[in-house]
Length: 539
Image (cartoon, rainbow, N blue to C red; front, top):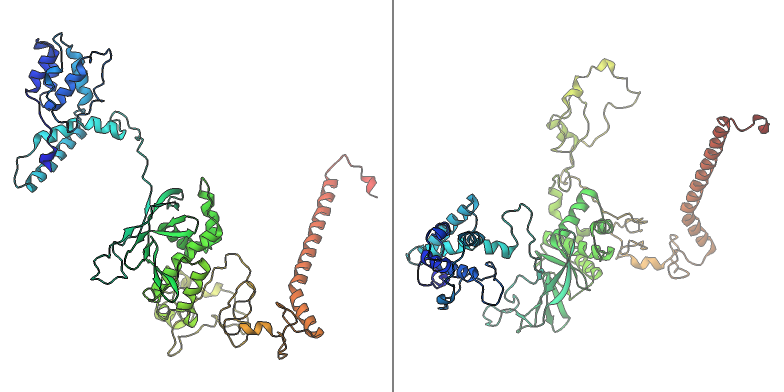
């Protein structure tokens, strides 16, 4: 590779070339020749072209002449004239081409020599290409101009625009075809599509979406999933569990994985749901489009569905219809991991500061030294340390406890035999009011099918069409009603439903009365401290 980088050289050395161009007086070109001692011959030819007019009335610029890897064209006799050029001008042109001999430039030259030495060693001991090193070092100024870097300025250069992100699968071969298939490599069947990506910097960027295709089984691979054809159920979709991007809308909107991780952190730390997270992102976005609550919900489901499937070891067997909506994805995930309410058996034995704390019993407090002489408090295992100052307070200054009050609150002494430690189930409802938390049947604790308007779980959903007054058993008088057509049952349901309304009405009445009293008191104070109001008018 080094030999291919060697440019063609012109005949003659740099000193003779510059003398022939600038004139025959040695003292006139002495300074310029000293600067050009190590200048490559190729660069001297470019300097010679720049020192003279081209005969058309204008003078070319030195830095506009391409000097990297030019082949010798054999026109070295057309460079100059015999009338001579001032040495000051030649020196200025040389300084424009050569980089300044600063410590940084010397370090660059040393680095280039080291790279060339390594390259020579790899090429079976060829000589060190010192001329190539000097060529690259001499042309650093042109490289600077190409990159927009000014060595004389401390300002940040204007970098070229970033290329658009490329959204494609990480796979190179189809994983559904057998290993002995010779045409497993994925192909691009359609041109790329223009999409928009929400980056981790909270800005929208235009991107290119490539869909890979298998010519054998007609599978299609996307950045976050792949689809395949089945004879019975049509096309199915399998999730990728470590994608760099998630699709959050069917209209060409994607989001980086780090945005989903930020949403997870806001859920754990701030208890913020997807709608609040979307509002927070929209506050940071300088330009449209705004991310909607539905798109934020889709990002939430895409990320946490994968987390749950991996935790339940269901990632290998899970699939769903191709290009399904967020509701269909959530339904299939619940169906896949919905055994026992989706509880992980291993979660009962786990506790850390990142998710939940292990319940601490009274026996644990005594064993850790938190409870001394029958006195103690409550705390979190592994976090709260014993408060030694609490036991040093004199008991004489403490107020006596009321009769019948124990010195410490009742606490469970130790976990029951054969049972795991307690845990807390937490659900973020995102500010929504949920009327029922479980199935309305007393003996059932299953989750509701519809948290918005449902009352029963999936097993007892048929009871929604039967009168809610036990043990009537008659069908409801109209769809969505709670009772049958009997007047006493309808009146009972109406009284139960009107209790919250009466409470709100009483609260509003009390608030109005309080505001009226405050207004009257304010007017009285203003009258007392205003001298322009005659007192006898109030009689």
